[in-house]
Length: 245
Image (cartoon, rainbow, N blue to C red; front, side, top):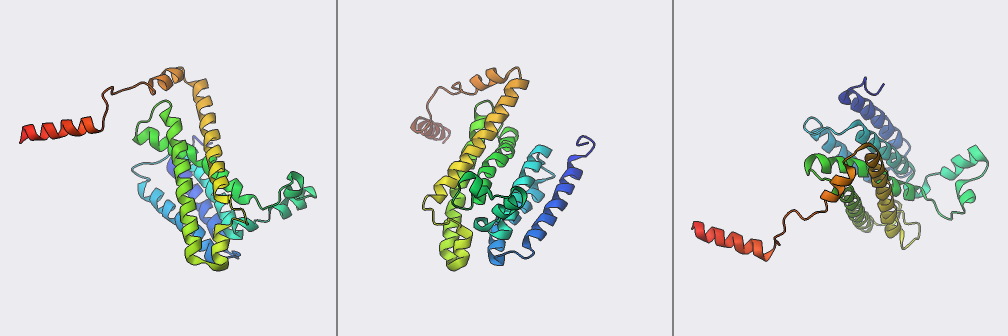
């Protein structure tokens, strides 16, 4: 069925579904101003994908992973991450809350989304590295992990700065630490674990399907340019410039 759908039509379906999810998330949002803050980056991201679609469309796998992540984010934006009532949902289904079953003492929905950030976005990031930077072998798996880790750090900085700048209940709702002084560190660690799992699964699939997997992996770690860069390269550039002059 997926083969019968063009990438454009499939993306249109996802866009319509996502628009419905975003609208539903905004209706009756518990903290409307927090909902606006949570969706600021979403709107920027969607605008970027719309602007670059014709020149650089991603695969349907990547678009699907992005869609699932944004749906999870919209759930958190509706309730605020620290107040998503998953315990009420599991109590209604199983008779006991998830926190009771697992011995949790805090709302862990934000942890789930941070883990999902690495798990679901590492593959689309890998696709960009492979198609634009021509990353090969080891680097096609390491660089997506590196980007997930660095962007997680940047997001924590943005979250902290926004919470400090806004202050009050809205700032606390946006930050969502729930009194855990190591909240940012754990969020970044979970995103890293998610990306590591995603890249490990991708590598395992490629190892199973591609006969040249080991050869490309080893070749990517070989030294391509034995001469050191830095001051030597600068001196060569200066010498070449002076010769031309």
